[in-house]
Length: 620
Image (cartoon, rainbow, N blue to C red):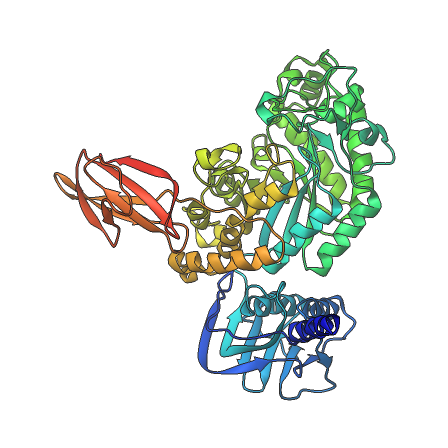
């Protein structure tokens, strides 16, 4: 009898689990914030009787299949309707183009009879569906819901910029196909559409090249030092086995590019020219400068200055680059290939008789113009094959063609110069966009690249440089965040560094400037953390150091305003030098005054727990 009761109890639990939960969504927390969102009285219930209808869209397109598959993952196996009915989610391609929403925008309406998403293109429908996902409960991917009630609303949405990117460096540390796909999934959820794949650098060559097999047998592997902190690694010995690294086969490249295309993401490979090439010169030392007797190795630790450089006067180097591009071009259908151009240390060129002969032969002024000559040669070769180049802003130093696109990382100056000369630019200044930098106090976070980009700082990013006129602003394609992986050797840490700052980048690149709101964004971040953790992502905890703003109140006092990154944070402070706590000092409620020369001390609490440490701010 006891066993029978146990079986019945188990069956009852399974039955209750299969029924799922019922929930009423009270408000939406969509990232990036839509162009227009108007909530209305009333609600629609999504349940197992809700049907799915595609209007002017074939049911076997990649987007339609993605939508159906995604709903199934969320335990909604909706029947396909043959026509529009009540209690239906309708995805519709417009018969007449809606010029306001363009190629990537959409109109989403939650009404009495169901949910309607319309767009000019399947890309627009795809992004409309991503918004719909974010309207569902944050734990939808982990919890089965039987009924979800959604408030009526109208959303009209389209992106501010066409280029919404994210770079992943796989040279310093290698990441698997499944890990790359996981990043692409994250990008799709937040409407990011350009995956910049940094495939080659001094620390490893990561793409299969048939004509030069030693790029893979030698340049793709190095001595394993991953258990040693990056800055403490000793040079490799000649007899040590090279067990760390790898490369993507051409089939794996195709798999990732195809997967990205299904998510409406373009993949941009980066092949570094002419510097950052120590791995190439170990495999093929003949491509180095004739008068350089340095023996180069695939690097295993910090490498500065990066003296390895391909010889600018050697014709075989140019043939090598053309051969490599011949194998890369068929793998990447998007129009752009990134050719690097950054941090090319030219000491070897200055003493190389081949490079100096090339400079004299071409009547070039200096080594910077020699680099430009090399890049223009490759650009011309790619152009005849239907491709365009992107280069880091150093490509401007010796002159650049009108067709080249500049990726501005050393602040905004590169983009300003590019736009002034009629070149397109993509913004990724280190102070806002380098997510390999610390995101909070260095004492409380894992070791990262020296620098600080907090969530609040990341949210201040505006891709349009000041000083550009209206015509020049059109040359700014957008921006991207960069994840360089010197200090990141696993996917969990990569996600920790991306998130939650990735939410800020998504909103900076999609949402109109006048729709951005830090306080609203901060509240949405906490709900987004629940969503992405339920999806299996690792998310950073943000900074608990108060954001301090001061202004002169009078000759002897300052007005102080405090802000914070994590919703729900309570700040307690003192102005007499004593240590603040929940039981000592003032709780911050709004702006206050403090004497010039005093020291403000703060303690941040979340859920009754002191976070990080007590911070001191001298008021000067």
